[in-house]
Amino acid sequence: MRATASLFRKEFAGYFAGPVGYVALFAFLVLTGLQFNLALNLLTERGPRGVEYPMQVFLGGADSPDLARTAGVLFWGLFPAVTGIITMRLLAEERGTGTLEVLLTAPIRDWQVVLAKFAACYGFYLLLWLPTLVYLPVLLDLHADWRPAFTPLSITLLAGAGLFILAVLLTIIGANGWFALFLGLIGAAAAGVGGYLHHTRDPEYLVTLSAGIDPYPVLTSYLGVVGAGAMFLAVGLFASSLVRSQLVAWMVALLLGLGFVLPALLRYWFEAGSAGDRVVYLLGVPEHFRRDFTRGVIDTRPLVLYASVTLFCLYLTVRSLDARRLR
Amino acid sequence: MIEVHNLTKYYGEYPAVRGVSFAVPKGRVVGFLGPNGAGKSTTLRILAGYLTASSGRATVDGRDVFWDPIAARRRIGYMPENCPLYPDMRVDEYLWFRGGLKGLGRSARKHRLGYVTDRCKLADARRQLIGTLSKGYRQRVGLADALLADPPVLILDEPTAGLDPAQIRETRKLLRELGEEHTMLLSTHILSEVEMTCDSVIVIHQGQVVEDGSLAAVRKRHQNQSLEDIFVRLTGQEGI
Image (cartoon, rainbow over all chains, first blue to last red; front, top):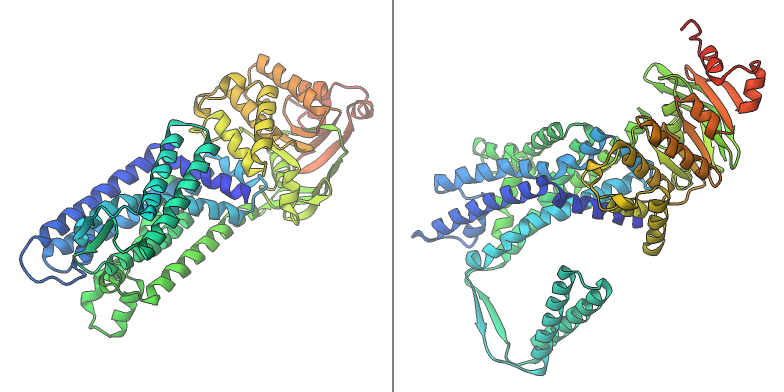
């Protein structure tokens, strides 16, 4: 456990030690920023829109106008490229520079190595999506109403939040870690308990959030993002375990990743409900978002696909490390 | 401490190691000699758990390196050939990470980190990026890593390769000191080094053990020739 945690920490920190992590963050922020910009433009145009429309444009699933469709193809074409950038160095670099020998002769099992590396790149992937939460108040048409409802419970909530922020600031300026952790835990506990009781007991709330549109399609969209990302990353990690060169690892990851994107482009060829259409739905990740996740529908078929491909690729990665021993 | 029985390793059709058997008793410092491509690194890699043997058995401190790999690796401090390291980590970051990988807790890690940086004379390079270190310092980082978990067995693959004479002398002194606390198996090309640091030698040629014994016994068997002459004769390169 300690070995896995140590490797995870090293890999995760590794994204910020070199330029690769910043390049991925920058490229992804530009990409989602463009999508957001497009969504905003289209939402200000006249015409009836479905509840799914904002997230559908944002995640590249809208059919009309043509501009949105082109942006969607671009977004999904570049998506496996970005996840490939995240995963390419994980094992290929270690093979290339020979550090794999030092890593695999440490008392750590192969599956722990794979798990730690996967967890690290998954963590970084979730970090990529974090800035996009800033767009949501606009896409959701979110309103916040403030009222001076200061009761003992709401003050506990505010004080807890303040303590927590103070603890974060203390960690940043490098104060005693244990003290900051202690402060942060107390803050979080006070904020949690205060917030819960404030919500259940008090007649009036400090702040009331209300969305202009149904917020659940947004939640399911992010569920899809979290699931599909795991699949693309596992594919990329496997590609990285096969070769010595990071560039080749990236290209293999892109190629395999496009295998789950391009089928969605074939959907115009098949009638709805035909066998071809079902295959396209099974393998085309953009279709999962267009038909289900951005509409607030949770279909288990895509989720099962993500989970099974992820587990299968991680298993293959473990076997690929093992096979190198038997060479 | 290390026991090897009939170890064989095929790379495809090519047998790199064929039926190697030897034993290293506790507390002994053994030099592992042989020309390039004789199968030295392959044997050491099998012992360290980086490769799996095609057949045969190897145990470290009674733990089989194939059937009980984690326990065996816990007892080994291994430094590979050329000492590969992560260039964009700092020395103390790297050792801290390696300590965690070897299962040391926070306080034990802190304590051992202080000990190995002191022992390998890394104190003035602690905050330096590994990529900017000279060859000698890199070698010391590798050695510090091998010592980190205080393993009973040290396996070092060419610990003095590529160093300048002063560094070789320094490393040799360190190895001699370490030999008093650890069982050590070190491969090398430099024969004078074996004479100065090792108690006994194992000579391997074309994947087979051709000589095994204490330095004195080996010399006696070969009519008190110099180690260099013995080495050249055993590896069949007499004409040169």
